Length: 308
Ligand code: AMP
Image (cartoon, rainbow, N blue to C red; front, side):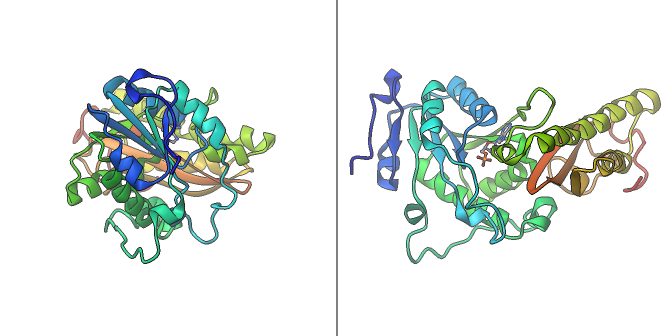
């Protein structure tokens, strides 16, 4: 079909836009391939991944696929913001070589029956609130990794559980690509960039900044406790975030959790990095965010119980 557009990918200029799997598989200009999978409606968070890929790889592939498998029946698949033309312009500006934009029937043709599940990780945290979400994520990424065949895949720390689960899935299924996790890009007031921020009205947008504020307050408290007592209590940090957010009338907290960052298992005395993560609704919009708090001296105390 006429889905291939643009110049030589290694000469700069227009990215190639590839609609079907055959075209994508055939795109092999040579050199290490960096891959950034997205749902589209690109923002600075996505662009930071593309820039990192551009720095580290000879070829950069972006996928834009609003994956129906990772949305629950009551979720926002139909409302999810889209702007393919703007996405393409931003992709060009970021120096992307190829944009893979399959439609759902290309990714999941009739008879498609396989599901990739990462037991143990898929039911925690976000998985509790969004049953089936991570099976959708793991399934689409396994398929995309097979189609694109990258050397490196770039994802965001914003979706911390996704990063842990995808790393596990890639190791278990033997995908040779290296997974590179990039820092969360934030608005000036701290709100993590997200395509879903577009749903927020002015008042909600202002209230949403309470989420990073609470997480940063906990991180600061942890640093203080480390300095003053040599350690911190992860349960107390969790409680601090909860307390801060319960005081915000427009923020309806779903969960706050403190977990071992690499495994999402419980925080123990030897835990080096604690992932403090939360989900909240602001109006109808569901937002997630997290910070990682490092223990300078694991085992040095502070950890007493998983509670305030
Ligand atoms: P999405 O389109 O929401 O699936 O996001 C695509 C990729 O961009 C995922 O790896 C996300 O973790 C990453 N991402 C989304 N928002 C941000 C952000 N604010 N900072 C860094 N990475 C992000």
